[in-house]
Length: 156
Image (cartoon, rainbow, N blue to C red; front, side, top):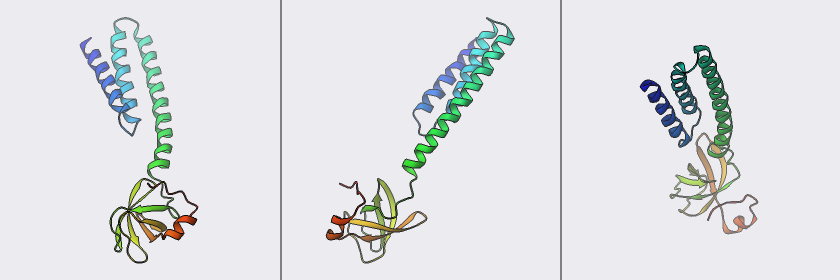
């Protein structure tokens, strides 16, 4: 009975930890399996072995379906939000001086950048011309150009 309670406790702890991290899925499945195994061990004393086995298989199946659906939905959301590389044509703001290499903020993400013409001071707006891997090629935005850009900057 103590071993079953330990497994249930571990399952609950892993589920709680999994709820507070970005990458859901593995902990969810493991937590549900441990919880199911603990319940399975507790039920062995209360019901037949076959009934306990059916309940365990149901819990494993449910945990697999839930883990897969959570993984797929979060994978799509994380790729769209955190790993958007479609930044060419966007406007950003220089965080460090670009003379010619420094850092810029585009759509809330910090990038290494190289200024294609001249230098840029921190706080100045830049226009993303190209992307080479994780490095952006940017050009300074003049006051006149800033008025005519279609892309929303989202910069304060």
